[in-house]
Image (cartoon, rainbow, N blue to C red; front, side, top):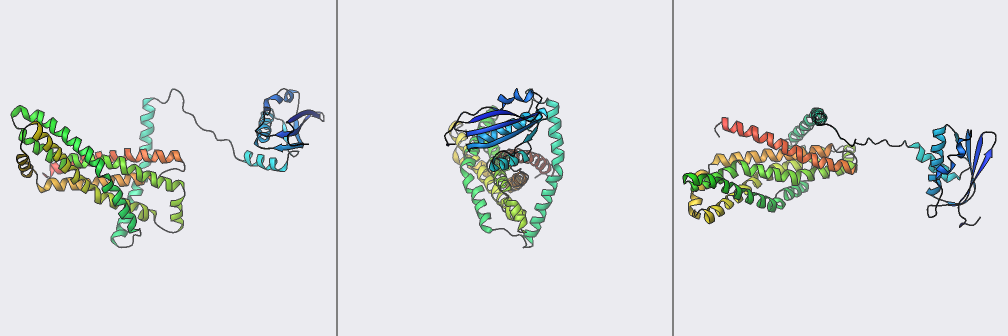
Length: 377
């Protein structure tokens, strides 16, 4: 039979309650093939067995398999036995492989969605389920630091320097822009209130102390959480998808030492420096507002800043920056290590890393502010 013969389908009785489907010609996707539903009526006439005869096939591809699979589905729904031994050997093997994997049942979201209470309850349950994993990961990081101080932690120094470059110098432009705008806003808001009592000179105190002590560290932490925390989660999540982290375990290499520790050290070292940089840029923005809008001289502003700032303000800002950096690295690496084995899971890990980091930063900022106030620092 020539290869260009169109598809052929003959339905013949086979025994008392059987049916034979004789296939011939070309059953390929490049032609218009019949649907399996054309046999629906023929299968309703008391049929108990169906067999295939593919001796007349000239050529076939997945189009034949789709048709045969559809017929099998119709027969299974009607309790009809199937005999596929008459098909080509290649087609039989492919059908066996396809039928060996059960159909995936994907739970679709209802059109109405969940109620508010259900969403809050689900989020609460997931939070408490994740606490043991978070504590376990924190314990592994603590052990990794102990190995670092004892000289037994193994990671490449080049990885640490690369992370430092990525976290520090490459983040300067975005930190500059955000800090400058925040400094402008803070100066304008403060000046609007201070002008009522003729104390515009204290704009320098407000901006300097606010940026160095609180706002600089907080804004830097949020920027780094969105920029670097998500990147950490995405990179580690991709490694999880590619089984690279499992390869570390197989080789006996601690993934915490090799992957998490350099990132944690980089953020703990660079975020405090970025905090100082942010405070300096915010004070420059306050100087610009003071000099151009409220006629405060540059030297007056400079003198007032020196009078207002004390060493304790810098130490508070540096300590908060270090803690925020550790929180960001912890959240990013935790979500990356918890990532699933799909591209969608990597996206969820990156999103969750940012949310977790900002939540931890907010909690840490509140606690540290209260503690420093009680200690009169």
